[in-house]
Image 1: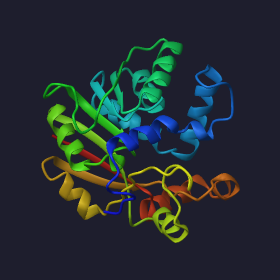
Image 2: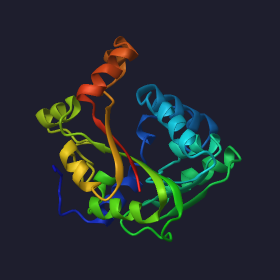
Image 3: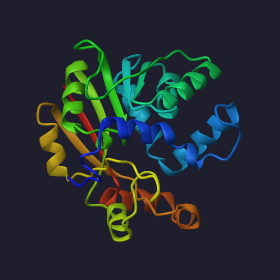
Amino acid sequence: MSAVAEQASKQEVKDFWNRNVCQTEFIKAGELGTRDFFEEAVRIRYKYHFYLPELFDWIAGKKPSGDLLEIGCSMGTDLLQFAKRGMKVTGIDLTEEGIALAEKRFALYNLPADLKVDDAENLSFADNTFDVVYSFGVLHHTPDTQKSIDEILRVLKPTGLAVIMLYNRRSFNYLVHWLLNAPFDGSRKDRCPIERTYSKNEVNEMFRNFSNVHLGIEYFMTTGYGIIWDLLPKSLHRSLGHIWGWHIVIKATK
């Protein structure tokens, strides 16, 4: 498992994401926290992560009207999509800034959500609470990723569903970042203190206490997006993503 500054503390990780609320660096429309701002966030996220709405439909179909926890919800872009699909949603984030934006967002769209600052490694929920736990690109940034996975198992109801994304070491994106010594998240001047990638074998071992573990590979990320991304048809992105994609998508049941 590769990492940057493995000795970094959780407080350093929290401080980084408070300074760099996920996705805000890409959004140019509207003032922070306005409807225009949130609509632009949706447009950008699902233009590039275009497989996600299919995943949301699949999760909602498996657990209609279920209780869903998102770990690392940030400003609530994905969490809102689950709420719109009729699920009862709870979102946690390590950062106050992310939760503050998520609260504005759900109030703006008049949808209910339980939102709070919490720690993936020490979830403040009782055993067997949720039908679904979803976490997208978050757990590879916490100091003890295995502990967070064990916590997910604990709070899931029997036969509950975990859907988790972790970074894939055997990917085109990892190779480019390694060659350029570029950060996965943040910038060279302000890099996320903990960044890990995994192989499929490592992920299977981390989820050994779950049942029916399925690993999929998604998201052929072209650096810089823009023209290069737009020139490639979506079908080619999807095909390349299944081979060299940056995302390991784990679907597992308790």
